[in-house]
Image (cartoon, rainbow, N blue to C red; front, side, top):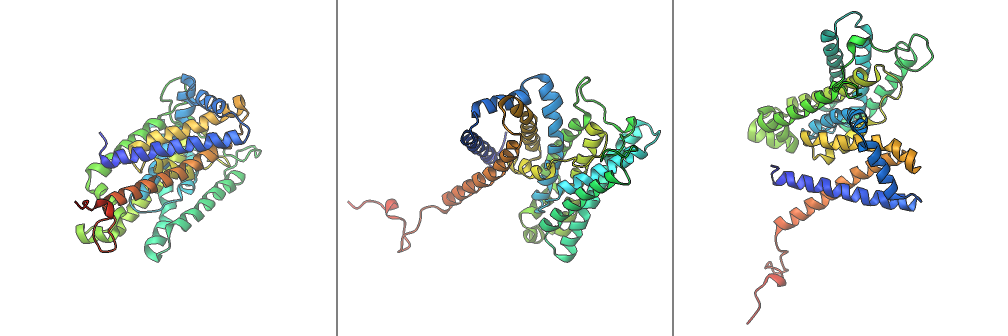
Length: 366
């Protein structure tokens, strides 16, 4: 059962979703669309059939789970890693290269090599802003955002140049070899074992946070680096570096899983912004790794339902992007309201000018 903080986080998430749904319905109505028809179309596209759930919603949730875990881990450690998008592209580039160079290697060697290469590439991509933060004192928000542009444009350069498919027509690589591809999790569907891997990693990360010394150190450093050193003699710099690299590895793995499990090639515009949406996924889950799986499925459903909403209700799919932005704003606003309410309750009655209780709290004179 969730503790008091867990219930508070669930309340924030529920409140944020309620606020988002209300505002989205109002905006659709003002735009001349039927909110009820839009909601029905989105539900049909995301959960209307077994194939919609398994082959669309759950498949689209995989990159959200992995990038959401990356953001949750970094934010727990007090590291503002906004670079999951670039780290994802770095992982996708590495996965495509290993998958193309694998040749005749068997799947039991090549698949782990593809995933390991993707994770390593993501970690190395995060190493640059991590060292700039620790060695030069440069804030990681700016550096990770800038590294996103480098990663996106590097992928674009490669698929237009050195790694472009052999015909030289499309901005993508050739398909990776068969042995480098992730097998299906459920035969006859598009759901691959990357989904199971993402869920297992979420459970492992939750266990690390709750039951290990490393998890305690991450949470302590995230709360206060100075306090963590004074009270627990924790090497905050080492924890920050490890968290940064692990976060990058998870984001890189998201790119590798996408290439090895679904697209089987690297192409320009591989990610529609998963690394940025991951911030909303992690915040809505209150940085809880297990809850990240649920919020990632929610965002996967939004993407899955976008097409149906456009087909059946005539609503542009870009509305989903607006809904995702509303989720972020609603989470922040709802959480801030909760924090202020809790702080006011702890503060007690407002003191009067003379230092005593407020007139409402004073006993009535007889």
